[in-house]
Image 1 (spheres, helix red, strand yellow):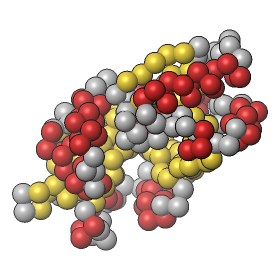
Image 2 (spheres, rainbow, N blue to C red):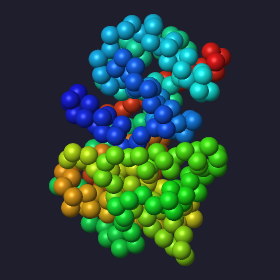
Image 3 (spheres, rainbow, N blue to C red):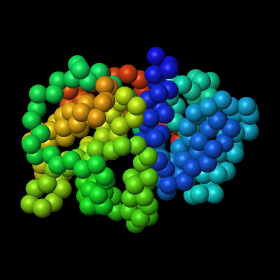
Image 4 (tube, rainbow, N blue to C red):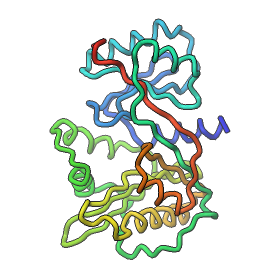
Length: 252
């Protein structure tokens, strides 16, 4: 199981580049002006040779210089002792996230997706529409995030639903090895409940299968019950959980 978790963790790093990154003794420090926890945190991806008591303060200094708290991603691949170390430094748990997986031959994909439009690239209009769907107004985020989407090194399947000339639902599939990762599923509030998210997910999974994907993964924040129900109805099941430890404001 640990080997496959490592594979999914590596693929998720490929799927969502950060604005800036620094490699540090088997850790990667990611910085994106605090757009998301995932793109603004420290991840452990390789062998570490330096002691934690040296590395954690170093990371705290880097993020302080960049104007954000230090954040560490804690997955099953990270030692529980490291999580305890951060807890003892006052770090709080935020954004607990469930990773769900699916063997595509076992997927329940009987929904038609005639309303969904697919493109191989990620159009600027799609990114701008995603900002609107998420309520992203920070001018720095709106300036730097498009370059993060355009920097994705893997093959993508970009999905959208349009009504009256406007994109009202989005989704993104990212192909890596024998997997398709499902990202950016958003539906405008006044169009929720009409099955557009199901159409997009079904379409992405089927299009991914055409391109050779045999498995799928996605990430859903704990407590997002509507999304969890949708993904379970498609055949996804929980595989593992990760969370973020966030430096206390009093230490900044």
